[in-house]
Amino acid sequence: MSLRLWLLGEGIAGSPSPAMQDAALAAAGIEGGYELRECTRDGLAAALAALRRGEAQGANVTTPHKHAAASACDRLEGDARRLGAVNTLIVEGGDLVGVNTDARGLELALAEEGIAPLAGPAVVLGAGGAAAAAVLGLLRVGSASVTIAARRSDRAAALAARFDARVGALALDDPGIAGRLGAAALVLNATPAGLPALPVDPDRLGAAAVVVDLRYRPRPVDLVAATRASGRQAVDGTSMLLHQGMLAFERWTQRRPPLEAARRALLAALGDPG
Image 1 (cartoon, rainbow, N blue to C red):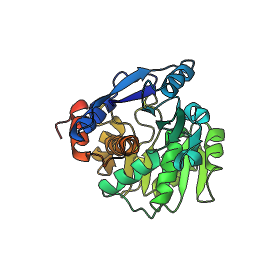
Image 2: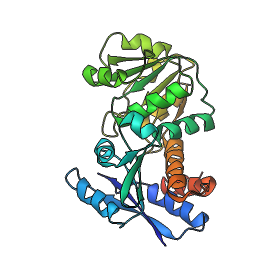
Image 3: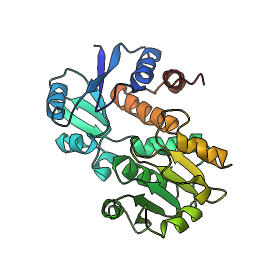
Image 4: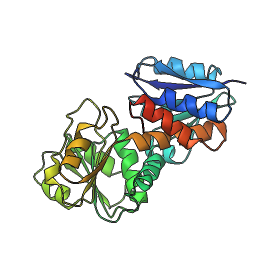
């Protein structure tokens, strides 16, 4: 049987995920394909119903559907239960199983970039689904504390309350944020792509701070370029995109993912010869 996979989300026309996943399928000798399925909030229910009917065997889920898709699942596994959000769906006997590979994808990306394990404090910019997965991943790789900093202090506080005492919250305009940024070993940007390209000034960071921006296009993203220009280490979200995608591939296929074939295709899709 040909394996049919979808990406459900809004504004996904430029996603490099089809190139990455199709390359992985081909390298693994699996017949099938990965398709973009533009899906509004109102259209999500119809897309999930089509999955249940077997029109595809699995899907990735991206903004803004991760929480709504989780609520519609028949079963949530692991991190998806912890976060109340999914980025991967598997169809099993007409049931939808929800998985979240974002936190683990971040852990693998940080290790690959030589950033993990961590010991010092971290700051996460943003309070949405990507930020939640980032907090979980950072705690698991050893961050001593995580401060969630967002434009809306209530959203930051609500997200922090879902974790233990190592996680705190501040508004981005709070005077106390300067001290947190200056002391941070790592600053991770999980704000949406439409927000300002420089959510923080790299010169406000400690000299040894590392910046991770989960955004991956344009390459290099402005925050990454500005941080590198300041003499600090910075990475974009390409490695995390690769690893979370290959964790989803493994769950769909029960095969070891062909990581390097997928990496080459992803970099080519992003205009980077690697």
